[in-house]
Length: 140
Image (tube, rainbow, N blue to C red; front, top):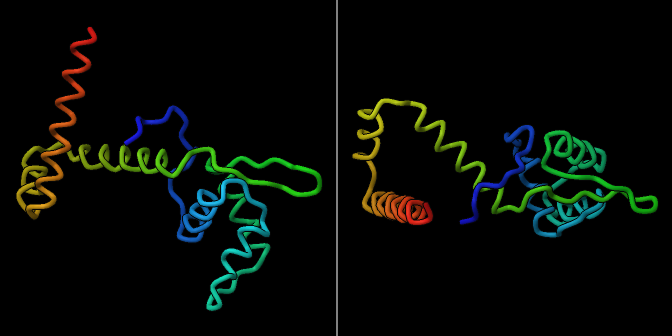
């Protein structure tokens, strides 16, 4: 996984439509309102006003997820973070909220309730943390 990016959006939370549009932008790269609107309407069971797409793009820009620039008569939006960087930031925030509980007994009780696959995943994470610590100590 990539390291924690230096840049963070002003507001991490996004709604379902914002998340859907972000995924479209991550897939396409640089988009116009029409690009996003056409992609959403490619599903015959969906309806969404063109102006709604514009509003969501503007909101995502205000939240710090997108940059917008004008080329000719069209406005183009592009992500300020890759999808992987966004996942790293969100995971980091979730981990900090989890650890903010601060009570080792609560966290241990949670760990006891995990199934074998989740326990193995936590063990793998612990091993990576240990390896990162050792690498850091060797550099000093």
